[in-house]
Image 1 (cartoon, rainbow, N blue to C red):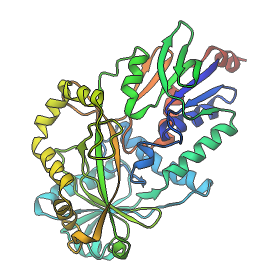
Image 2 (image 1 turned 45 degrees about the horizontal axis):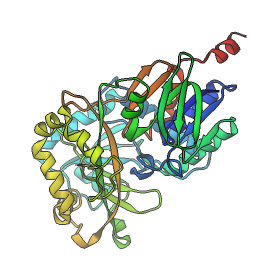
Image 3 (image 1 turned 180 degrees about the vertical axis):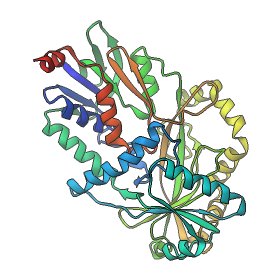
Image 4 (image 1 turned 120 degrees about the vertical axis):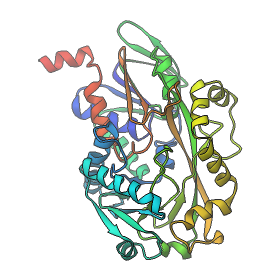
Length: 404
């Protein structure tokens, strides 16, 4: 029997496995992933940004874990010689009405203990010569990394600690016993005293398998990106973000320099009709009906109807998408961008129509469930892993070893 079984081989599941191995060197640890590779879904399709934590509510898990995680991620990449760059970013106001919102972001950055600076339009031009704006905020600790490589290193370190890693192993059912959890999978049964649910897009379903109600449902949002053609990459030096609409829960279309030198532009945010729906035509009846019959979705949709329609139009019209990019860099033309990969964000939504705006970690009997860990979870992964390792129930065998 394993002491800990982790369901999900994304960056949060792997960081949790690594943190448990560090905290309990004698523990038997199992990590199960249904796909053939680690970091297959959210982690492997995200923007690769090491976020600073400038946007998040002071005192929240996101604010603390992201600020600390930005540094611990850079330290980890340096220690293991993984590609990364702390290039910083600029957040820019392009209209007068955005200037007070930009100031609010600056103040929030200070509250969150982040190195930020107000900069004029001229100073923005010194960093990003092709940006047109009224003013900006420079965020120094933002960076970029290759999170797939980070995950492979996490997995390697878990194996070095003696952990058992299983790919192509989907959990079908969880049987609760008084002393343990029995995981019935596509590769047989596994028994563990404690399970940690890091299943991302399926975290709510896995929680319910374990008789835990997270009081929220995962609603998938697809983020679609374009990429600057190689001869236009000179337009972007770092990362360029607009001032986000405070009434809308997404950051808006922005430019991101990637670790491979390419420049991505996006994302928009549209409802995905499948939890793993990376294209417009992907559809799953169960996933679709779960969203359509969930009262919280319709309350959310009514609240953000205007913004939602804009996002859908931008999804189907390249010209409209490019217009959003031109607010930041007027030189960008429709032929300067080509479609690239999309990602799907696993966003927890409450029945009252409010999005869960912080990381959500739920305790269960012999279990811990990470039920909301969208961006900035990759940046924060080392901190989330440590926090989960501190919260998990300690198996009896390990309790005896600790006392001894």
